[in-house]
Amino acid sequence: MIKTEHKYIEILRILKDHQEPMGAKRLSELLAERGYVMTDRAVQYYLRYLDTRGFTEKVGNQGRILTTSGIMETDRALVDDRIGFVISKLERLAFRSTFDPSSSTGDVAYNLTIVPNEILEPVSHLFDQVRDAGCSFFSGYSFIDRDPRVPPGHTGILTLCSITMDGVFQHNGIPVKVAYGGTIQVEEKKPLRFMDIIGYQGSTVDPLQLFIGAGLTTIHNYINTGSGFLLANVRQIPGRAEERGRSLISQMQDCGFRFPLTMGKGRIFNLLTDPQRLSLVSFSGMNSIGCAFEAGYKLRTEIGAGTIPFSKVVDK
Amino acid sequence: MSEFLRFVSHQIEDFAMQVTFNPTEGTGTVVYNLSLVRSSDLEHTLAVFRATCEAGVSPSGLIKILKEGEIIEGFTIPKDQCGILTLCSTNLDGLLLQRGIPFNPIGGGVIEVADNIPKRFTHLIKYEYTTIDPLQVLVSQEITSALQVIKNGNGSLLGNIRECHMEAEEQVEEVLEELTDGYFTGILDLGLPNTPCLGVAVDPQYMGLAALGGTNWIAALKEEGIHVTMQAMKGLTDVSNMQFISEL
Image (cartoon, rainbow over all chains, first blue to last red; front, top):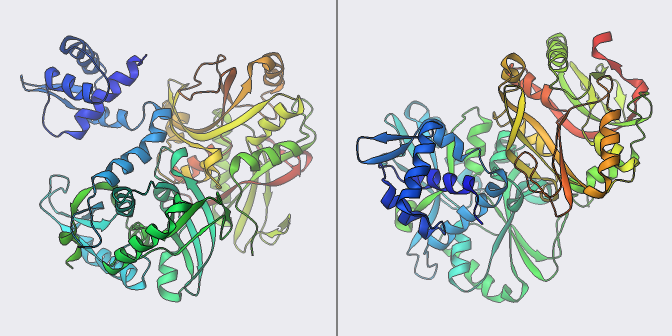
């Protein structure tokens, strides 16, 4: 039994994923793909209800679009459901990234940060510093300006999302789970221990965004002194996959990826994990965004915003 | 090497076990949150705390103020700062435990309030998955609007939820009745067995119990633009060391 609220939220989510207005017929097709089988008429009924709630509006006879409060509703409703959503959104992206480390080709997943042009220079200077200090996930980043998500007068910065790595494992037959996002204490370039971690399976907000917003990073300190609190991810693969995992990792390192900080079974610094599974700890691609936040630049970042050919991020 | 990381669900159990608080008599040991503000902001801070108590957005008006240099459980209040002790919502879990009520702490999150009625959780971090208190990180994400709730009854507050076995419904109700407006209150919703509570699912045969976070006044303070740092579940103290904000 699928509850009413789930159906109407799914309609809102579909409209959110598409910029153009959409009619009941197309919606009912897309809903069916997602497991919500409903007739056009039923969809019409829900749309009228959503109109009265102010979540959708009609655009002539082309169909419906989301209103601002409709967009907000997708970020507020069904809290239980959204806990799993953070991770399943990333898993979708991992599956879509087709990067092949042996040939350095294919698509990689990225985060998109929107930067007002007047602060682009100081912000990109900070991104350079993070890259040069070696605490980013990848040895580069790039800019985009022609994209519907980038408003006029702004530039988008693409940083490589570490979920790319999950895609590589997955496509090479290694099941992988992103377990935690957290902060890690580094002393004189040596990782010492986790300060705090939050599991992706237990939060409606991306863990790394929480740590950045709560001011729990000192990335700039690390750049200056080699010591600080940095953002890191923990992911896990079956212990049996160790050998294959290691060879994929070394291929990816040759392409410019920087990880892992450490890998092992059982005890990882001050975290106890399943001894049968191999945990990989890596710096997050979000360290650049965290560093900008520390300097007072509150930038909007979409984690896992999409996939893009590797050749387009490697320039810069 | 440092101690192992501990998840909040276990931290809550550890603290709740040590609570001997009696909410009708105002005696016993309680769990506190420690917040630090600049000494120059103290007066403004107390005004905000008072406002949250009067509006029913803080679960308790009990407070203790520490001046710079004072020491609490080995922690020294830094120069030019004030330490503020307020009650943590873990005290509620302590009261449940005192009665032998089987309960599981679920998580902390953001609750939407419309016309002074709590509607639903809009964000949640589960205790089992985090080593840092959810409200301690959610309070700084600019997703609360405690001041709006105080002003016109609409907005978003911080809250938490645990589940209690339905077999103990009577005892849970006894606990809730004991919570007078005086020492500790802040229950937002007691759900029906097997039914989601403010949108959060519960285990079979359990019922959800949602309460105000002890950190809502911190949210209000941040919304006012006052710099504050906070540590949830910092330690234990005898409730007689604290006094009501209304008596300050």
